[in-house]
Image (tube, rainbow, N blue to C red; front, side, top):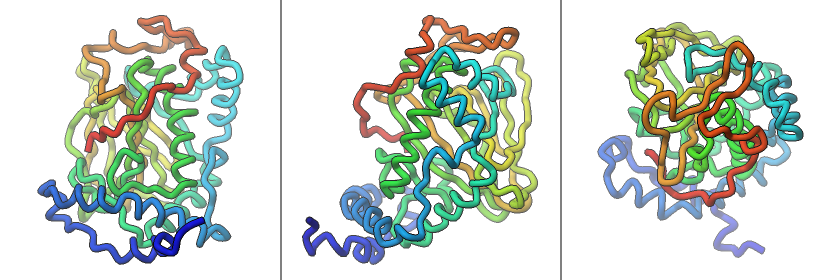
Length: 320
């Protein structure tokens, strides 16, 4: 039973004075202290918020995801030998970069409404200032300060990471052994601010970048360039509503300036303990044989091993 001290966590959290953008950009020690000192309070506030709004809030779960992807993934968990049905849903853009429908377009508006409700909760959330302090983003993973700690969202987030991203990354990218740890954030690109991102690689073994724009939320610009380091070819792609791109973290990529509208994405990473990622070139990863759709991996990892949960403990290291 909660004590009176903890029953007003929501009101207390809403009354907090969040560190300024300037302090965050300077990485002032007071910023980290603020989030760490208030971590328990904020987690209690999110739990209270869910209870207070339980009659109106969506409980996000995997039924929000594309039905074909969901069916293929669930069948692979039941019988890993059926994993090629999952691979068939992903289109190769360049080696190490694949795209597929991730969210069900008929349900995406419900998820966006849920996310808008978290913004309107007035509970402080930390922006992902590791990527130029994207003003409208939020940290998603519990290892991050000021993350979106709503219990129902966290259950959905963990489901995406454990049941979808990790085995798909192992299947397409060969990341087995470098995927115990998770990380995630949301971003929004706008023409007037936070409009692009220069060429970079990620501190991940695998990155899953999911567009959550609705079909009628059009934007121009904001194309993403992927650089094939071996052929020096640059492939430009545009995010479509509900679609995801999964790629090796070491593939260089850049976002063009957005010129109209907004682009909203969820970005999640996998990497190993103590932020270990594969070193070297393509031989550090596995691959899909495009002629047979069969998985070819350096370590000859079995399908059963790919479709298994990570049994290692989660650490507390966050990239930013």
